[in-house]
Length: 519
Image 1 (tube, rainbow, N blue to C red):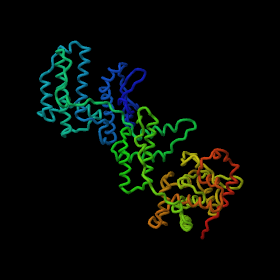
Image 2: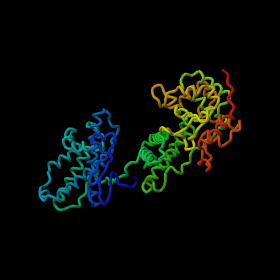
Image 3: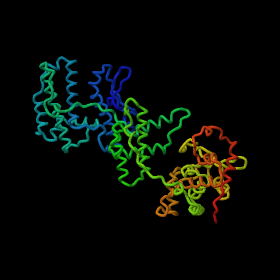
Image 4: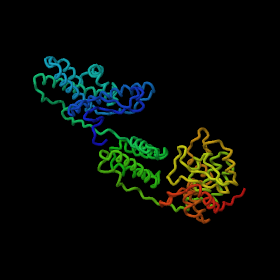
């Protein structure tokens, strides 16, 4: 990560160049996950060879990318490892100088042959602009192709970018020939004289990019490890990915290593100025990106922003919290929606409003119910809100068992459950698993339009109303907290909660008076 040489690996005193192969290209490289070239145990020598080794690996990956494009018809939007023409020329020049030194070290005949003056003249004509594109292609086309395969450029012949790069490579070769001639005379002090190379700053190996998705993937894997692991729910991971993607799009970079506090501040201000999202949502987005950055730091505290998360001290937006009663259904609204539900044929619209009205469940929890979640104890029916079956809940306290209220029994809920097939009770038209919340919300807004009741929470409003039922009818606080999946953090919540408590829980539910409905 930060501070490391890109594509550099050190293990047991040995050094190598290593690049992870993008997953979609692995089938074209014998399903390998990475390519590695050993550089030996001498660090200075390994550093000298590193750039050439990386270029060699990038070319292999480039060939795989070419095969992938041919097979799928998909073209990359930009080079994988982009470099400027000056950077490509500088690296090419250095590779030629290194190769010259290697030949001198192994073959005494090499230094006895002079340079080819005609070849040098051709390269001079090349960077002077005297050669056509076809002549440049013949002269440096192979090296241009290597740079393209390495993902350093996507310049196409016939464009000014391609010609500038070809001329830069001519400079590299002309200067390399000049050094070769000087070395043949015993002078190893020569430096490039052409401004393109003479004025070029040394190319520093930058840290390998660490994308937001990389960090989230690592966190997902970390939480899934171990016998009693608590995996990160897919829906939660998606929320983090979506918010990080929005931030990355705004800053035009997915690399989390380059995040600055100024970018974080600018992003939230741009979201506020756009006026499409409330401050509460903007605050949540900032907090989620900040959390992902914290994960990156926790995974590699020595290298990933060792001085601290740059988003840590950014002040989140303030917002006004609506009073709870404004978000809840009124009794008249509840009757209106429950009456409309009676007329529905689709199971989710018919039963989820009723389930939520008499339990305080979250709509997402109700949407995940299965036939197997309903059970009978001592002649009384209950249902489980559980994570069993790869389902997710908001918190650990959300795992609970809820008594079936008499109003639900009278309405025919148990008849519906008993007649249902095994598995999910509420499915989509074409697939079992669907997002219930937006569907229920849109359906409710058909009866209670937004412009008439903008404060109402079409889904969460049942939860607020059920809490008020419990207060009105004297349901004990611990029973209310348990049935709604809330926690007050007291240690007693960690004990008991076996079947022994179910009759008392049912008695507490029976205190709640049914909503007066008319047929």
